[in-house]
Image (tube, rainbow, N blue to C red; front, top):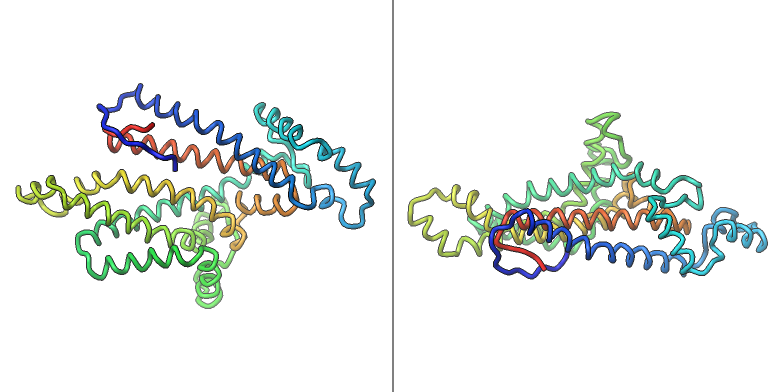
Length: 329
């Protein structure tokens, strides 16, 4: 998430909020160009290319050279990148070098599963982790220890390892859930939900412990403040103090960590979608990378970056609305 320098400021109005948005956009535009160029450069320098993938090992050097020329792969890297940028600025992300499908169309078809996976995982993390963190801040003891254990396990055990253990247990042995595949929401809401249980659980497991731990730390800090002591002395109910005052005061660091977690979730979808055969952007990126399909990989990378930028902007706005005395530079 974008770094923040916090300073006291009067209540935010529409003008101040607009300034924050414009500053974020000013940073995001160069970021999009940098990410796309680095992706272009790295893929161009890797062995093999789309022409070899299309024609196969039996192709002659002349056939490969002719197809590379047809695809524009014989041009200098910088020229290829500038041609792509020119088209992208006009709303055209190009076509797949392998299938000929429009990159925009392919991304649109794959966007729903990825957003469903990350969106549900984010909601599950917030709904589970924040109450756990607040409760452990109040009670401590075994609950706090359990959260520390989950947090450590989430950091130590990668998502894909957890997925490889979850599939044999819950799908093969217990037959509770499908082992893989994705059912569109429009086809069957029940099957759609079932197809996402295991991917969402493996994706969210580690983050639940991390956010719960950060929530507990933030809540403990607020609960030790003079304000909460005065509230208790005045006879306010403990639950009221926690949910109305402690949670609101703790929201700023929780939102900050949540932004980092969401970015991590998007990066983790690359492996999770592959393991569970979910037709999302992560799987499309893996496929494009293995085939040397540069336009498709560029399109997916830019869309991923754009989604993360938009999420960070939304979180910054929420951050400012939760604490109007905070602004960002």
